[in-house]
Length: 193
Ligand SMILES: Cc1cc2nc3c(=O)[nH]c(=O)nc-3n(C[C@H](O)[C@H](O)[C@H](O)COP(=O)(O)O)c2cc1C
Image 1 (cartoon, rainbow, N blue to C red):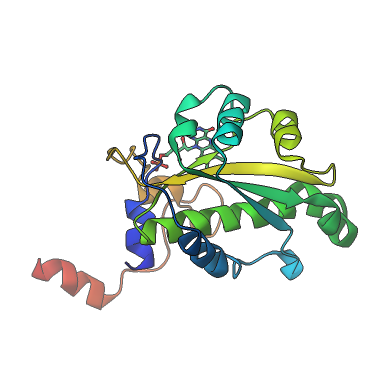
Image 2: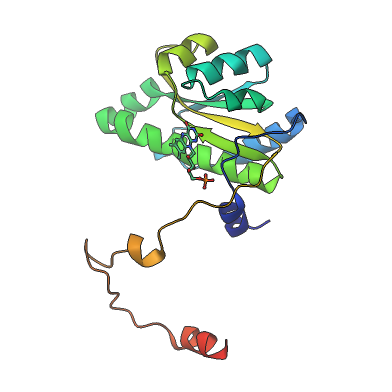
């Protein structure tokens, strides 16, 4: 599966089969995800692999009672190690880079899991203090997201996306027109169709 397919095929899955996910598969995903870029290559992340049923149940309750989460055989909890980055980049590092770094890691994990035929959902709606208490996360770290992981038991349609023109400006904010003319080869491609 190429990157484009993984990006387009990935869906948020909230219904999982009973099939367990091997630790080898999780290790492979983490082994690739560790190449995610981070500001100053600081790698301010820690991943907690949660398999215990009781803990998954507690996490789903902490996630504003999103009880569907319990079904997923694995929860990957992505933690942001804040002091590491504040020391290097101050407030901006703590408030922005640290979250961007973890978000890039999360998205890469979602894509790698998709490539392996696994299903995921990025969950960030949770009581942070509750999650920290359940997993004994120290005060210098912050749970950023819980990724539910397993095999899909549903095939939802892709929710509607904005089209390219709606999300693109050229050169300056608000400018919808590109100064660049489409290349001849592209025009020929469309003529042929
Ligand atoms: C930062 C973030 C937080 C999210 N939190 C939740 C969540 O708490 N519960 C949930 O069911 N989905 C959550 N989602 C998944 C979104 O609802 C989902 O990505 C969106 O509806 C688009 O659907 P798709 O992922 O299938 O393309 C979250 C996604 C992101 C990026």
